[in-house]
Every structure is written in C-alpha cells, then in structure tokens.
Amino acid sequence: MRSHQAWSVPAGTAVVASIPPAERLILPALQRVQAVFGWVPDEAVDVVAAELNVSRAEVVGVLTYYHDLRQSPPPDVHVQVCVAEACQSVGSREFVSDLETAYGVPLGERIDGVELSAVYCLGNCALGPAAMVEGRLIGRCDVERIRDAVALAQEVRA
Ligand code: FES
Image (cartoon, rainbow, N blue to C red):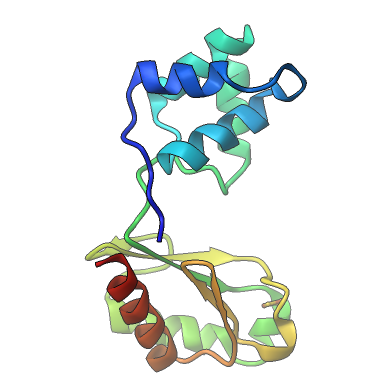
C-alpha cells in the first residue's frame, strides 16, 4: 500500500536538501520528491531549482520529458495498459477499446479514482495483452481480469 506525505514547501525543501551531494542532479531530485509525496507539485520545481542552483526551465525540461514523473496527485488505482506492437499483435487494441468502454474514459483519464494509461511494453510480451495494476503485472488481459485487479487494489487500500 502506498503512503505519501502531504506536500508543503518546507517538507519538500527538507527532502531535496537531504539528497547526498553525488545525487544532487535534477532527475534524482524529482524522483525523490515523487517517491516521498507521490507527485511533483509545481512548487517543487522552484524548490529543486533553488536547492540545486539550476534554472526553473531546466527543472521543467526534465519534469516534462520523463513521463513517469507525475505533475498531478496519483490516482487511487493506476491501470497501465501496454499498447506496444507485441501486445497489439495479440489483441490489445480491442482490449483497450473494451476497457475504455467499460470504464467510460479513454486512456490518459481517470474516473472514481481509477486512472487508465498507456505504457509501451511491460516486458510481458509473451503473455499479451499485458497490463499493470498498482505494480501488479497481469497477462492475457481482458476487462474482467482488470476489474478484479482494480477491486483487489481498492480492498488493499481500504
Ligand atoms: S509489447 Fe506489451 S508487454 Fe511487451
């Protein structure tokens, strides 16, 4: 179960200031912020820039380049669906369409705390279509398997 601290500028400053000198680079700093707070709030950009003595533009450049860095609070349950070629060859397009219909939102959106997003290969190509629900890898996906995994993740969080 995830548990993140609530963001505040003093808390964020303390986190970034505690990074060892050898790791005082923009990407590790942003990753540290996300690990502690669950996302990288806009205020964290200023904190990282000030603590690392770099420009805000440099921090924004890294933040927007790496899609694993979140600029909004994390959902309750994150469903990542593989849309890469190997999974497409075994029906991921139809699976994605079914999933979007079942949840009523497209990939990239969230509903009732559940976020659907696209990912490009989960290393589970032999068992495609593949997905990951809150870090749990699922193969031979269909909507029912995803709904079960989401329900399990919600139970664990409750
Ligand atoms: S292409 Fe989907 S898991 Fe590799």
